[in-house]
Image (cartoon, rainbow, N blue to C red; front, side, top):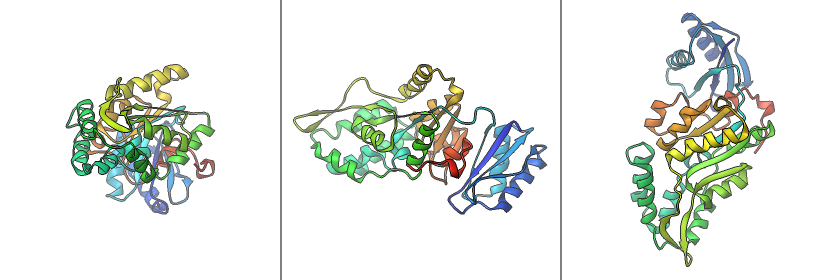
Length: 297
């Protein structure tokens, strides 16, 4: 079969009857649909198919699922496992927007979070919004950085995603419009090979309100993907990117597999692949990893 439709649900949320219904839907559209193959019992399964485009298969799945909390992603069967993972950090690898959480220590969380939401939905220029938000934090004691990090939570499945891809020879990196203070710690905790992000200005133990140049903006994410691919000798088809905000769209569109993870509306509407319900292990299942192959992270 030329393509694979992968279905992933929160644990226990995928039934054999659902797979049978989806297979029948593909067949009704003229596809040659194979027997479903469980990757993780009642959680993830593949349906191989031919005769439809990935977009047609996912549209059929969306209709057949009728709003059930199940993610459906269709990709070519060839080259399914990727050799480079490039991941956004905020609201992707970690559950929060670290700049918004940092702003809480200046009593500005709601004000700054409102700007963040508009920026991540593509309503504001990313660079200008970043500079504006950091400027509002001028004079904040650097101790707030440590307090913010102590409260930062890793997204479920992130550790397994990195550990499993590393174990199978993939290069894993973070690229973030956030800050090195956080990306460095996340990279160390989860085992990313590298991290790329912005640097907060600090003087005399306080934030200066400036973002040090060069600023990593939305264009830099795509540039990082292309640079790493070239350095590793990989075609873009062998890459996997994941993110949630408008500044991730370019790298999601350029990668062999670009996944919008619980994304902002503008990103969800534009992305070819979405994970709205499952955790980050869904990115492993889409690559064909079975539960027995997943490495705990």
